[in-house]
Length: 52
Image (cartoon, rainbow, N blue to C red; front, side, top):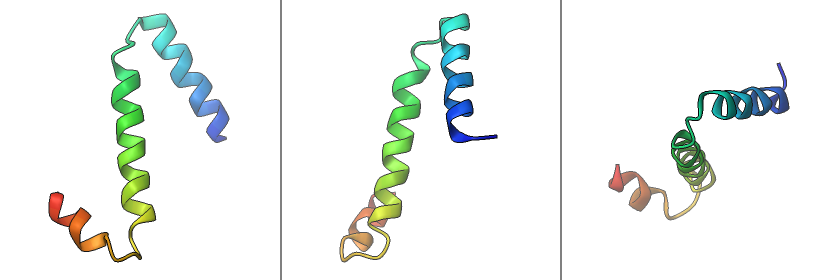
């Protein structure tokens, strides 16, 4: 299953069920995950992990 099909299916779910409040939550979680992944090897890692 490709990433694009997962995004299409998620969009169809949001559209059909009218669960628009899930969109910002998913976007926030994706950005948070990207932040953790990209700062893993940097000098900021100890400060970011201390927040959690």
